[in-house]
Length: 201
Ligand SMILES: [Zn+2]
Image (cartoon, rainbow, N blue to C red; front, side, top):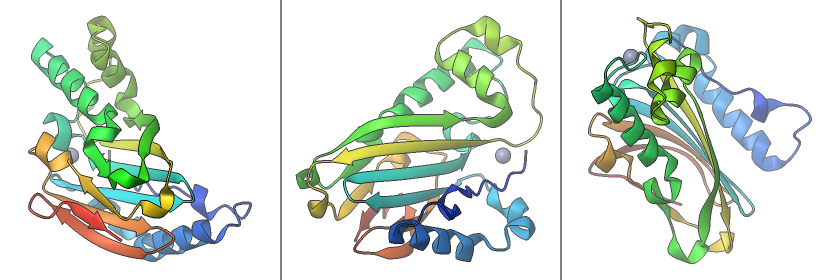
């Protein structure tokens, strides 16, 4: 499934704060040619991460080919594949471990939500080890993405100025993350790799 997973929510006219306007402008600037780039958006080994800090709330939207995390992009078929999904989901759910922010800021994961597109029932079932549900999922011969939304609350947001992204250590299939960063101190695009996985602002 080739997707152009651009959330239009930040561009809603009802959302008037400056940070959202900046985020919207950044996204529109980056992805204006979305239709033309749809086939470029899904590249194995690469992922996209939007990082937005607004007051004490830190929100991250991760979009990645499923292959980067699980090695396949269809419903898991074997117990080994279901185990891979369960292990991978456990790591992905642990936002405090994979996004390590400035300790003094006291940021803690508040919520996380995953969307596997058409594979959501199969992956949710596999993560819960309900194999009967997984086996009834459509085979899905095309590519598929994971969209994950992480929300953190920070006790001292003024102390938040860096984040180590630990995804590379957990998932060897991931080689590069294109980051769009919007904080009160910075608005920038960055590339993270295994050897350079710290965001600073
Ligand atoms: Zn793919």
